[in-house]
Amino acid sequence: MNTISLLPPSIKSQHYVSNRFRTYYSIAALLISVMIAIIVLLAMNTMGSNLRLEKTKSQIYALETYIESNKDLLTVQDHVNHLKATIEKAMGKAPNWAEILIYTGEAKPNDIIIDIIKGTYNDSKTIITINGRAYSQESLVYYIKMLDDLEIIQDVKCNYTRQSSADNDTTLEFEILIFPHEGQQFQLEDI
Image (cartoon, rainbow, N blue to C red; front, side):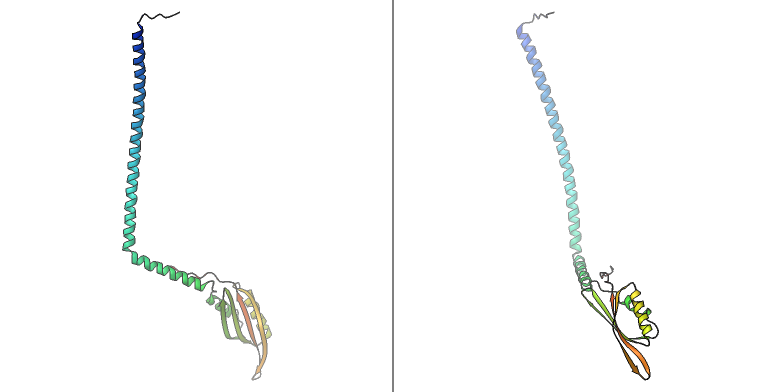
């Protein structure tokens, strides 16, 4: 079926033009609404960013005020930290001398007499020299074995033994070299 319209063409075109304007107005209103929504969102985001910026600025100001008021303390603390690092570097990996002396003394049999204990420390290498006298070779061998069995000792060497006689007493003069394990890095305790 065909539809027949008896309306004049001017009315038909007027109706067509008004529909077109209505569509354009709807699209324009929609675009304006979207732009207003975007502007509102951008304004809210900007206000939030400005609030965070102001908060950060106030924190920076508080921190700068704290640093300025405690500048002397911070300078002293930096100096203390520098001195502490210098001392620790100078001490290096020094051995625990007290521990070594205690263990070498405890390992000594009663018939061994220690005349001199001397320690040297150079570039993380420690050598302890013990000079003394023994009344028998067995005691000296036992002492060297006891020293060698200590966990803190890496190696023990007998540098020399010499037999000497005085007042009808025969003794063995000896020199023992002890090489302890490398010490721990020296660290000052925090106060």
